[in-house]
Length: 358
Image (tube, rainbow, N blue to C red; front, top):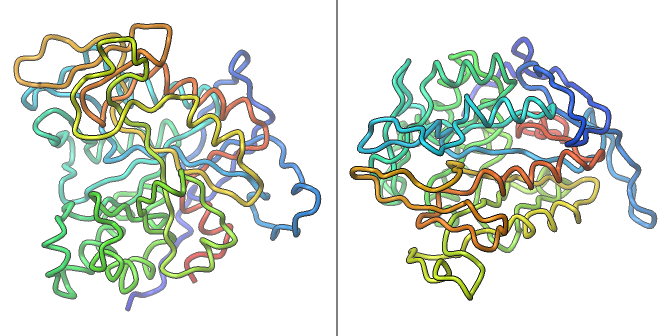
């Protein structure tokens, strides 16, 4: 169906191995595109079968995924950075200071040369190609596909072969043509319907032939992927976990009853507990959207609201899933940085280490 890809672009697979990183004494680095951060690798636990040797060691591995690479917030499509941890101004430099880099997803036909695309009810701005290039060249980020146009389920169910190819393999080719590392690592299918038969068929017929992994939501997985199984089981799904906003977790506070369609604010301790349980041979995909600080500004039309001011994360809340407190996200990142066994890397590096896609 597709020609074998040239997956050896200059700089794509350079690996940066770090000694144990601590939050209190982080070393500022500028990783090369496609680089990873890790400490020493420990042997598998006693009593377990030996894990296959890979170029990355045995892990565990973590990918820091940023859905749609949302650079900042907007008020009726006018950028408003007030109390936003912008990707280029705050998040990427912070990760770089810990020897880490993120992985962004891109909807390729909604990515413009220099203009940020307005999405999510005119409240969010996604990266331009210039933004993605800056993040890749200066902060070591990688980029994967979020399809070409972010199609709805009805469209996917009615794709012609040419349309299916354009949404999958074509979107990978577009990212690679812009000189960005990691394009073959993953395709992130949109929406809550990733288990629908039409999406599974799209991954089976196209996605698995162009990408190492296809993103599928499965809450039971809690973001943990056992690579011995994932790398040998077509059509090669990878399961993320997302930190999401919602009502606070303190039932004594008014914020406990903040209206939201579903869910509750993700406690950072929930994610940290999962990270602390990770074993060699496992890969954790940790997904975020727009990270916020303080309280929301007085928008004209943007209806998003939040309060991250309490020292107690149980009292943090947002009224939409795609806003999360930056301070809580930092707690999670600090837990990752404090574990010398964890290697932070991108999906393509994991795929190549585990024999994907051919």
